[in-house]
Amino acid sequence: MITLKQFKPDEYFIWKIQAEATFRVHGFLEIIKGVEKHPVNKESETGDTEMTMNEAEADQILEYERRHDRAYQALINCLETADAIKVYTLKSAHEIWRRLEQEYGQISEIRRTTALHELYSLRKDKATSMDDHIRTFTRLQTMADYHRPATNPPMNKEDINLIFMTSLGDKWKVYRRAMGTRVTAMTTAQLFAEIRALEIQDKGDEEEEKPAGGALTTKGQHPGAGRTKKKHKSGKPYDKNDKNKIKKKWHPGMKGYKKCDFCDKEGHLEAECFKKNRRDNNNSSNSNNSTNKNGLILLNGQEPEIQRH
Image (cartoon, helix red, strand yellow):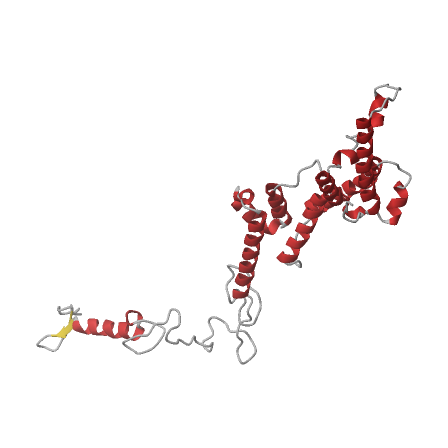
């Protein structure tokens, strides 16, 4: 007895492939497809009306009918009541096979067209995680292949990868262009893994950009952008020329930290020290002036000219 997988209209194409494989193993595939016909019908087609049958021919007819009946039984037994009623009046296994193909093969083609349309129009939105998007994409791609006619080959990885990258939307457009031909060279599983890794890395970068308050800043934007300026005790914002504004406090290890070795103050170096420069200027001025024997001050070593009236 031949046992076929239970027939389900929604899974017609996969059932057909499995049934063909089973019939092929038992040598009945040509019977259900109508290639191998009843020996008596063969003779009738040639116009030979005189049926002279020897023992060998009789055995051939019996053998065909035995094999045909087993194929017929396998088809009837795998059908649910609603489908069995449609074909119970048909007398040959080939007629049942063709009846199922005419009805459910067309339905599967419509479902394949629907799945392909949804697959090509699929776009990822911000609210959908990458894992959920990949699951949705894989389901639609599998359904499109599942309902394809047996004569059509399945989708190749190059087409699947290109359709998937397009489904990610404009956010991934630059990355899609940067990949070039590599997107068609890798397997679909490798592409999914790489996109998942990049998505995790992108989320990590966004977390690092969050300041202590938790607000998200844009890349390239100054960390202090958008913060409220400090206010004076009067309630008004500090003016840049206000002498009472808070001075910056320096701490060792701070970026740009400086300390003067001359006045021991922070915020500048010795070469920038105002006190040191003022002292040096005074010393330089005094060293260039001296007095002569009469007590007159010499400017740059010379006596000043005295105008007499």
